[in-house]
Image 1 (tube, helix red, strand yellow):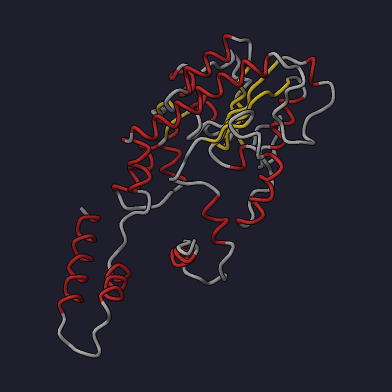
Image 2 (image 1 turned 135 degrees about the horizontal axis):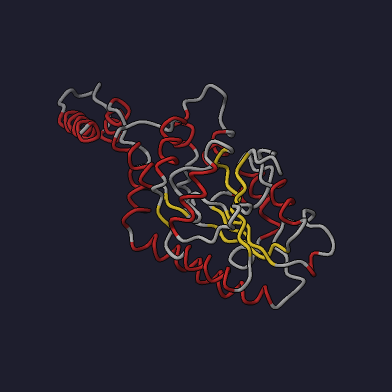
Length: 294
């Protein structure tokens, strides 16, 4: 209802601006529209993104296509003992003789938290730690289309999946394990293949240390995520630096590395914000980054 009222208010202001008869002081129609949008509370930025993930055939088809490609690639990887998916420099020598493993993020990679995002849109609020923990404890996340089928196929081929997620240990550990099992993802009896942020075995905040922990005993043949930090460390930088980090791995995407689409949140908005002055309004900064002059 709040969003509806805001939209109606914006439309009313636009109409009034367009119909004004004051000759020289009236803004141009385009300027009036901009003024109306700025004056009214904007619709929640996640509305279209969350709807797309929840209801579009296009999103489901994209996710299923990614996991279908990953299945074909996995077959190839298992036949090649030299195949390794860790970033260059992270893998120890001698990986060729180790059993195969996959490293996968959880949220928006294997499991779908769009209901949590939808609640924030409906309530017209941002992220809070309290609301997120409540959602995690409910254990109600669904599976991303195609994810369970792929994970079970990998398990049938003798591949161990390590769930390397930035959910926080120990507070979210038990609920995360339960949710993964509930959906049918293969989890070890002792849940040792679930590595949350802060895990005592590899407590660093970035995921590189957890990747190297897996590398001690396994050959990592694939990685999955929805954020650049699921594949590389050092991604909390500006747009240009992130592009440079990706450049050496251009031919790995869709072969060794698989990125799931997530327009609702991630590290990418902060990369854009780094390009603006410190006191710039964040929304104005993001708008200024839009390109319209190709």
